[in-house]
Length: 196
Image 1 (cartoon, rainbow, N blue to C red):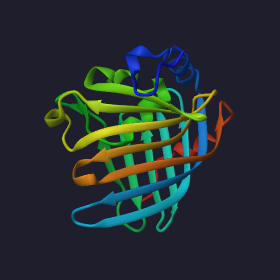
Image 2: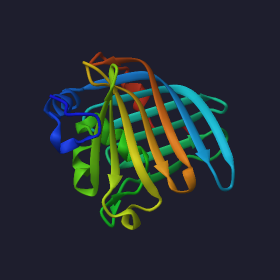
Image 3: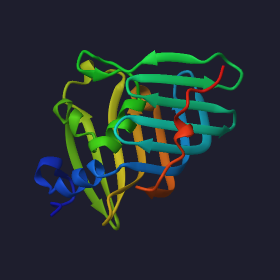
């Protein structure tokens, strides 16, 4: 069972959480995304939908304040924002760290980010009906500009409620997941490459 408040992740019984994520074949939820940059100051909140299909497909379709599509198919990342051209890049690991923040989302649904545990110290904190798992880089310079990743899970089902990616200078990206639905059929067209 989960250890005391502030127990390290290794001290907790994480097997149920990891098993839950590994058994996630599909996931959909309404999404609220917040980008907060301290310097230069910028704060943007977007709403839309997120979809995941095992093993390696992810789509975020944002509609407000502008249309934006983010689609991951394997190691291919496609981003289409408003009237701008489609951008294609490849997800990679450099110097042992992920190159795109979206890789944390994908890894969370795949296996609870356990593939990154060698890079982080993990701490789990229980509060009411939630479990917060915070990953802090073991070598901060190697993971620059990443400072920490905090996943908030609902208990007892381990469904993700929020993810916060903390960056330098108190900047951050948050994802809030509303009305999640797990392991139900998805329309495969949601993972189509966005049109130019």
